[in-house]
Image 1: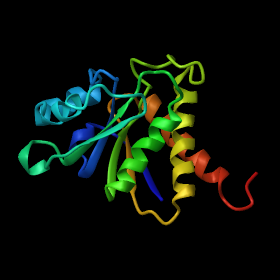
Image 2: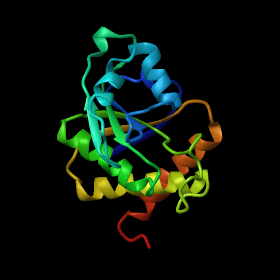
Image 3: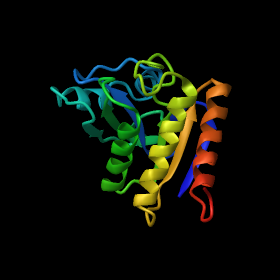
Length: 181
């Protein structure tokens, strides 16, 4: 398993796919979606929007090619999030889609740590949310230990969230070491 936490523009990291969230109406408006739209237009969002109606936790993989736009990613994995459940299943759904499509490099934002922070009672703050993201990521890798996907968790401009995410990923990895309690 290889997980890295980075700062910067998620569209500039060379990956097979970027993960982002949409609601069941196919609407998007977060920073990741604006970044994707700014470098690739609405080609990916049109694909996701064509799939409506969508259901919570559904995954839509929109295909593309970074040679045709200004970003460094090929595809976008949209995960439907109607803010009804915890973040962990959304993370696992995105990782399952990456596995299914044979992706080797995936860029993941710190989902639900921005505008939607605190909307779910199980994740009232950023620390709890990033801990849930870390746990779901490590659970997925434990269940798929032979899988070789590099996941870049990318935080645009919040050093506190970036630090919390890196600490949560490290703590979760350490917790799973043999002999750990």
